[in-house]
Image (cartoon, rainbow, N blue to C red; front, side, top):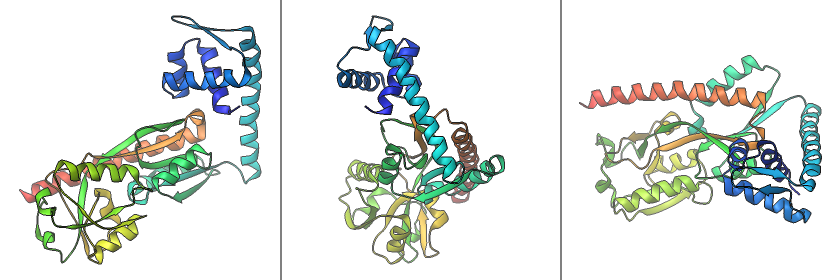
Length: 310
């Protein structure tokens, strides 16, 4: 019996409507229904009577609702007490350095001013490790490329960014104002590993297919520092988000593309059952504010660059 199944059941029982319960639990209706059916299967009883427009509790469901509320309340209390013993309230945040640049520092500064006693731990992780950390309760929030779907996680898009081609300063394309896909047909590429960064790999592979580029992959890497180091060493060129320019070595240039892959969707994810947590809510709100300011700044920089090229 899992806590998430109990939370879904309580939401359905209190809302008396699967659609409203799914919205409250931040799940799709089929996912919420599956969780309740799993719970009913474990107990061997029917908890809900499902009508055309509403649901009602069976006698067994009425007993289970009372017990489930108590179990969830005790679980939440246990979580708070353990956190207190561990040194007071704290948040564990996974992030990708390039995506968090210009967002995370500003959000942390504003959050710390409001909650100076809350300790925030930061973990530089791959997308896969962040998703695993959210699913297993090791992370309270994750700042990364938005995945298509994550069970039990609520994703909020913060901003989108364009792509750039990272090239070594002495590379022939370094003198090009904008790089067309056709100019890359014979280039060697260095990329993030598919295992650790599936969303990046999916976007880049799709762009290669659309432009009939049979990419020669010279190496795959587990982080932006090693990827850009490979570019600097002339191992290959790389497709990266434009925010990577903040961490690029001096000998690496970021060139605009004439045809963009799908924009990078930077998002923050948090466990669905933690969305009512006030401290976490303040942190997420500060991330949204910082992302809004960073997005406006990036727009101004792009406008200025466009005018310069004209």
